[in-house]
Image (cartoon, rainbow, N blue to C red; front, side, top):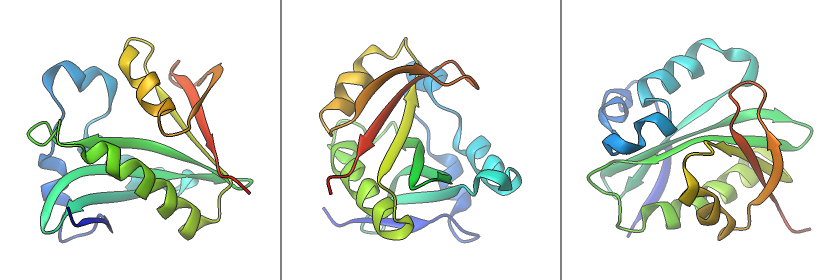
Length: 150
């Protein structure tokens, strides 16, 4: 694997929009097209859309932002449906956490997930995320957080 995180830009946004999750996952995450529109027009949260690559192959998408008081959101992460099950998520989550800490000097990272997506909570806990026992008032999703060691 030759994993890289690149900014989504005028050269790759069309490929990013073509990525999709499995049909039974579509209710758990916004489309990449919607995420790119949010990043372009909701400037108050300074979203950063990111293309996830294995060499020259685009395998996924993530979006980070909403930097406040040394904390930030890992708001979206997805691996294309045709490439799921190949450990990309397992490898990209630590890379994204490192990317966020190095580029934004954060101490804490938040994410949220739908309650119905039961498997995802144990999955994120494997990386050190903790269930906050709180819900995001904007979308009702359960919030988890990751704290960087000092």
